[in-house]
Length: 155
Image (tube, rainbow, N blue to C red):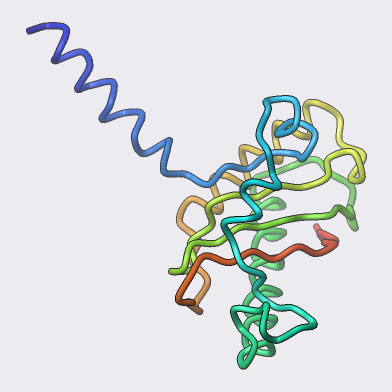
């Protein structure tokens, strides 16, 4: 009986953590054996030069507006959390969204950003905290992804 109670308590505390989006560097994901190409195959492009391959073919300006707001709000959160990175830090990101606009995965190039191990950990923690409750105000009929270079302005 105590075993079941302990297991139940463990599940209650770990399930919310499992529901949080995965935020990690591309190198870290690779080292952990996470195949980003497999994840990529499950998500259609949010926007694409070929409208037939884009989830938001007819709504590209609206999606871009919301995506840009996400990046700005994330930068503001990083600053508020005291993440110690250079103003104007540039990195490549690949963000995977559920059809409801919640973030499932957030991969980025820590190497391009020039992060130390400590900075990478701070970034992961702060970004995970921000993205845990973030939802784009636009939805799609299927999961979607967007990649882009990002510059975080932390002034």
